[in-house]
Image (cartoon, rainbow, N blue to C red):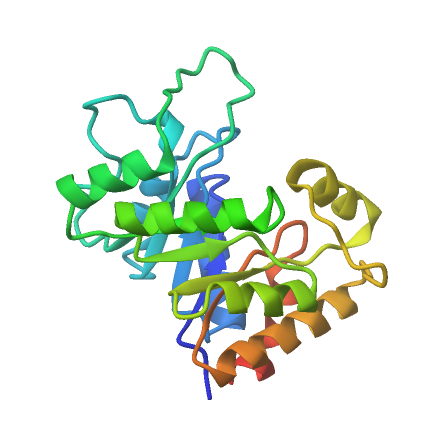
Length: 249
């Protein structure tokens, strides 16, 4: 059986880089049916503007929306964008530039605004098994669902046992399971320091090992028509994605 949906995350460094990246995805990984775009403060191109650039050539695009950036009563990003059907609301990390204004919004409050003001949009939320005790994260899942979230994007998973456990916790939910290669000690240190990832003792940071793990998870998800998103950071798209085609056939 094949996956329900297969998404690739593209970094919005610039309009030109996005144009090149989407061409690469279409060429080397035609199995992808969706793109998702994070909203990164170090780049001037916002995620919903990137989605507007991508959609003429790749219709299914899910921009990330940072809840803490949205001023009270301000228009919701992407709400009036023609043809946009889905968004992912994340809480958002405080910006490094302290001159940038943020607001004390919860993820749930912004999800509720979208459901009220832009009911045509399907709204996803985040699930992260690493950042806190599982029961607290699952309480958040319940609150986000109550607010109107239709599904979840997970923090990338790097441990098959944890992936299997999380699948049990989120059984019956609409989930995009995250997969991201961790290549070399610097990449591993980034994930451990920034996202508090606890890697298995036998975790290997070679490209081959990361591909093998992703293939295993994708094949498992294909058995029950699950969905996944691939987040190829610090590795060229053409070095990672084609090796996964057999696992999603």
